[in-house]
Length: 378
Image: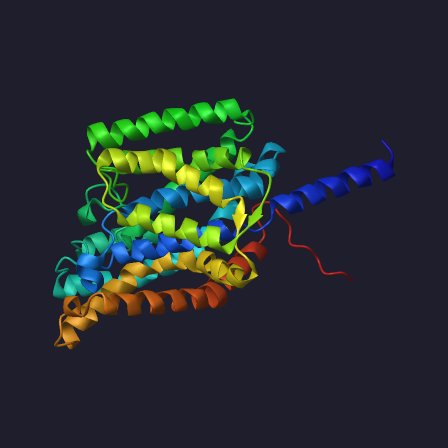
């Protein structure tokens, strides 16, 4: 093959890759709305009866979105030979800075709980459990079973999803070549769906779980199905793209309805197995108009920070209000909750820009194991 032909083929491949790297702003919007719904779920004193009781399902949507986005960015590279270790490094760089910040915000919560009592706002801490859990949490390892109310990550219980994200990301990288055929991937998704249904309906009697060792198997099955379903959706995505702000807003509204309506276990399972995949498949082919693109981008960009930080910040603020304010926070619901969500979102936009992005850039510049630091030109 001539050098010219090689250059032409390389150029076409680069153009194809650039096409696949296009931004999915509607998926960003879905991710942001899902993160904010989790905030409402975990701030009951601020929203009282207004909170979204079944928005725990937003976690399953996160997993589907993760599978789709990672397949769009890395599936060709993984199938071409990218090692699982290289992929894991990329994922840890993406996840660790905000994970670390969310853990550190949980430290004062634990200290206050040991001094004043948790009062239902924190796990049951002791000095021994604190000393064991902190070093493990700082390196993203879960707390040993049996301590701190059984939570995998007692400093910030919502970080259980990050643990399963890393586990299944590693599995995805290791199986990338074996799952090259979509039929094989579909079998994995189907088996995962059966396991999820069996655990959620027959064993646990609920699909809400994963943050404790007791519900470990349920959390893993939720991640397995939804993540690999997202990868499968990417392979069968519609090639075209529709530009419609009205349609994208309607999709975000549909998500709010799905998360706001009470679900039975069977309805929740149907939402995970069918409705969320359909929503993501549809949203992947619809993009907002120029007016809403920036807003959707902000929703997606801040979503991880919102998710990672909202719980300990709520606990700190609520503890302060209980001690310092003569007015009970519940009496100000839902207005105090609306203000909190707005302030949280604004703070997380700043955190994403001034902390998370620079921290990830710094980690990317660190040489990987076995790499040599490039010498400056003489």
